[in-house]
Amino acid sequence: MAKTINQTAESQEEKVVAKAKDFWTRFSKPIIYGGALIILLAGGWLGYRQFVLEPQQKKANDAISKAQAYFAKDSLKLALNGDGSSAGFLKIIKNYSGTDAANLAHYYAGAIYLRQEDFPNAIKYLEKFSTKATQIQSAAWRMLGDAYMSSGKKEKGIEYYLKAGKLNEADEFTSSENLYLAALAYTAEGKNKEAIEVFKTLKEKYPTTEKAANVDKYLASMGVIEND
Image 1 (cartoon, one colour):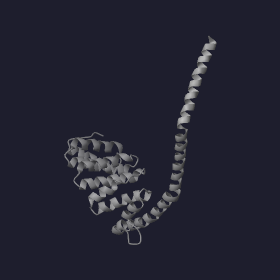
Image 2 (cartoon, rainbow, N blue to C red):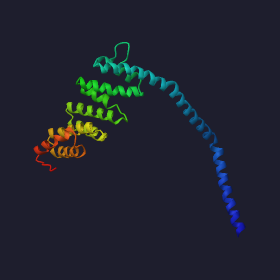
Image 3 (cartoon, one colour):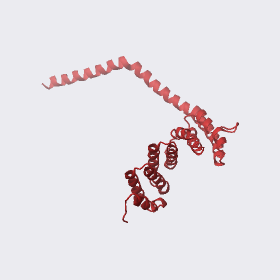
Image 4 (spheres, rainbow, N blue to C red):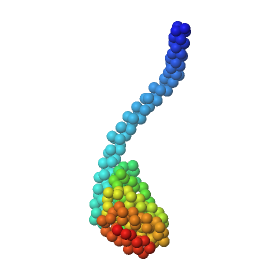
């Protein structure tokens, strides 16, 4: 009986081995070629990063520093469009797409258009900007809130004020400012229930801020008396 069991086990093992051999016979070339392709692609990516992307990043960083200098001087047209010899933010976005500098150029371009009251372009460029630096992202969302509110798209404006207010809660000053703007926008739209909720959140989370000191008068105007 034991012999029969062993023979059965051996037979099953032989079948598994035979299937494995058959699989390798039929698919060995695709596997080898596929593996080689992965290696080539990996090598190609490393080469692309070393010889194309990194030099591109350096050129973009050099270019944006000049545009930033114009921005710091409030020479907004030169910052945006360049001076003929150095690129402005718009050209950096076009010429260095995919680089960190091009991403940052979207932020600057959006900020400039907002100051020029060109709200559609402000929205266009700010919405294409993103960063893990919460303070900068919060500022971008705050500007988007301003641009949408000024464009008459109040709900969208409030949405971005709220996002900006909730992104970096450790930053009491900017978070309270952004929540305050959201609450005021709700009030202007006659949405008192939503405004009250945001005002209360502001007061609860940031009680020592300047904006929190103004909350009670707004709540009182909407019939809400807060007991300290």
